[in-house]
Length: 114
Image (tube, rainbow, N blue to C red):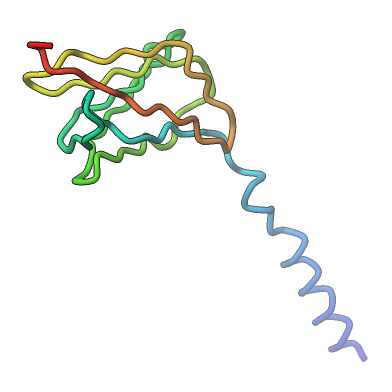
């Protein structure tokens, strides 16, 4: 009987000490697809998110499908910039990051000659 009680208490301690995974989320993200003005996807674009208040920034290069994902961003208001040689710089302000949420920004950038 004592052995059963010990086993039961051990299980309760293990289960009680495990916090839900979503309770530990302290960041959000920005995801999107970069395209040119004709709708074609653009790989190799440097996309940067800059926190307006703290100047914290995170960058990533868009993949072969033009997709990017900026993860682990502290909550706050961000400016998103997208740059590629030969194209005009894209800037979008007022992107709000919330805990455990993904904001979507799909930059469309034009050739410098347009």
